[in-house]
Length: 303
View (cartoon, rainbow, N blue to C red):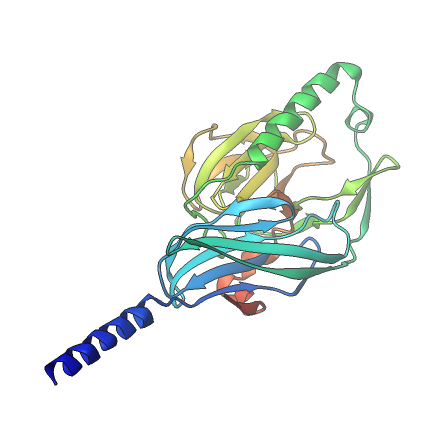
C-alpha cells in the first residue's frame, strides 16, 4: 500500500512538472494594411523566452522582452515605404528561444494600394540637377544616412503615442505625395511637412540616441534619433542643431530649431518616421497607441 501511495505521489509530481513547464505563446499581426502606414506586432507568452525577432521586408528586427500580456511580451512597430513597395502579399516571420528550443511563426500581410496625391514644386535648379562638384558630397551623405538607418538596438525606448515634434501640427505637405520638382517627377514624399517659422523648437518624439546629425545637401540641417527595435525618427531642413551623434535624448527634449535649409520652397519642418528601414507616414501615430493598433491585428498561436 505504501509503495502504491508513493507511486501515485511521484506520478502527480511528474504531471505537475509537465503542466507548469508548458508555455502557451502567440503572435499578433494584421492580415492586411495600407502601403505607407505603420502597424503593430507582438510576441506574447506565458513563460520566459529570449532573442525575440521579427523579419519583415527582408530586414530582421530585434525586439526585447517585457512583462505584460499573458506573462511576457515583445512589441514591434513596422510598416512599408510608399516609394518602392507594390500591393500584394508579404511574408512576416517571428522567432524566439524558449526552453532551449527555437520557435517560429509566420504569416502573410496583404499590403493594399493607397492613393497619394501629386504635388508640383518650384525650387532652385541646383536642387534638381546638382552641380558635378556636389555629387561626391551627395554620395557621401547618402552613405551616412544608409548606415544610420541600419541601426538596430535594444531595449525599447519608444512609447506611444509619441510626443508631437511641434507644439502645433499643421501639415503643408502630406506623406506620400509624388513630388514634381521644376517639372521633373521624383519619388513620393517620405515624410510629413509641418508649418513652422524658422527657429521653432523641435522636440524628440521618443527617447533615444542620436545616430546622425549634420547639414546635408538635399535635407539641410538633419537629425536622426534611434529609439530601439528599428524605430528611427528624423527631422530635415533645420536652421540649428542642438544635439550631436551619440547624445541620449529624452522624449519631448528640444533637439533642434526648424528652418529652410536644403531643398525647400520655404521654412517648415520635415518629419520622418522610419520603421525597420521603411519610411512610413508619421502623422497617424500621433493620435493613437500601440494598444489601439493591436486591436486591428490577428492573433495566431505558436506551435
